[in-house]
Length: 439
Image (cartoon, rainbow, N blue to C red):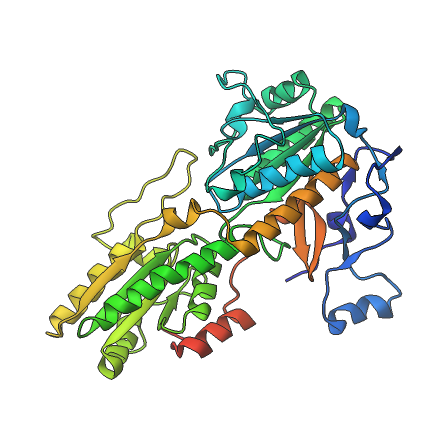
């Protein structure tokens, strides 16, 4: 992958900060000259060093000694966008706690139902968020602010922020939400207004570019184990039993890959990034035949976006059509695989029992596990530090075990995917003893 340029890594700022931070020195203020290296391998750094150049690096996240906004007069806004994800309430709570408890900000507004809450026609006024309101919201799944998909009129949204006097606006969302946040930044810049736009990476599929992990992913992988354990029990409970678990991941198969690594009972992992065929001597059905002949049971973890060309080409799949945003709907790969497996083994007069499990909406709506709860808390803290310091058009990232400021255009420049020739997929093949080529 091509390394980002200095221009792509440069974080926008609303001006020279001049307000002393109310945090104590124990907050470990960030040195503005500090940087987090993009490269972790000396071989990648060496060409830059030979030329006498600094290797590409992120601006580190964290508290600044000087702020752009006076916390006492700052009005902050928060919105949650897109699908549900474990940890949403944790991030909301962290932002409010940090703003009010640490910095002494007096007003935090929560806008309802995503960007729709900023539209002129919205019937839902923003909620006043305070320490009492967020006291125990982290114990529950979902989002207390509600959410929605799809964009709204950018000008109307900026008008709403200005009408409420918002200085710092936090957008908790994935790639589509962050593109909306970037549109807000551009309109705010065009108008010459001083409103900081700060994103917090919410994508359960963990597919934002140049961000190692987003919150909710750890919970999704952990809870996938319940479904895989159930599939294994069902598979072993019948002669030639097959447990088929469809996991989230339309373009990126990270949940399926990591869940398969964490569960030693998975035999096949199918992800969108690695094509496979059903028939032929090297196809998936032949590999499944070999597995059943040897062990008489099998567990399959499949990401929802795997094999979509096969599924859409199937006469039984029909036309999946398009959603309201014009995107092609994903056909049900779980149903497709179940039907093809049944047909194949029926032709060979081999009895099989297939149990399918789809835990997708259960995973989305769960409270965060311990790892995600801590991670979401820190993301929220760093988002507040960035916004009050006047940083804008960025999302809080994690890279090389450090928290970073990632310009939004860089974070949405491409979708992070499982590399079929990378270490992660090699570990999957090695652990599952799955054929490397099923085409």
